[in-house]
Image (cartoon, rainbow, N blue to C red; front, side, top):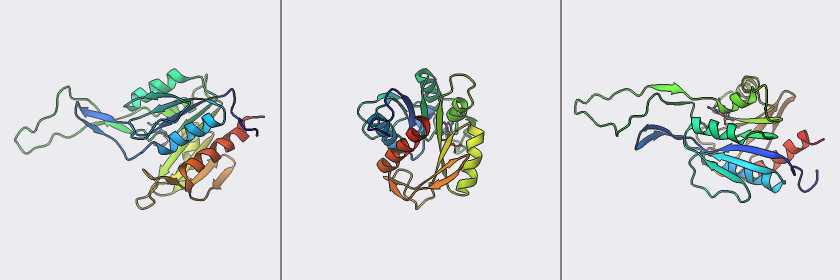
Length: 221
Ligand code: C5P
């Protein structure tokens, strides 16, 4: 591959957590920093691609040379992703909340003095990766998902390939103590229909540039 193996390609990347509102001042979130996805977006831009980065609330700087779309909720992330299509390559690295509070209270929920706490009723969020991966028209040519797991990494990653309609699942172990979620390093296994490729523990920037090279090698003739 040349210096700019993704020249002329549109790469769509999702990154970071989502925030799912409970009421105007409270939300449900997760520990994703957005670092891996931001590094992937930066690496894709460096490889010559036009990059759209759809990201949740993060505290890290935006990579240069990408079109960034900031969103809060999973539903807004799906809408932003659909608005950004068509894309040649879509990489779904966001840690999307699987569930959200079924309703968002219009005012701040108050203690009522009874000592009783109202249960929080949850409902499922749309699965952005699966929605795009299973599209029959306008599906990006190469669809990548992540699988952050604490156990049975490969089994779960293989199941996700089919369930989500992905061409590649990048599996990583986010067990407490791994230091990966929210950290600066990652240890990934690339899972495709052809098998599994385990990479050593690397900086997230290095994982990103190797991943972009790997994908470029698969899609460019
Ligand atoms: O099922 P699980 O959440 O482990 O799947 C992870 C993969 O699916 C990631 O690529 C993530 O970005 C994507 N995902 C998504 N929308 C969701 C849940 C996960 O795009 N609601």
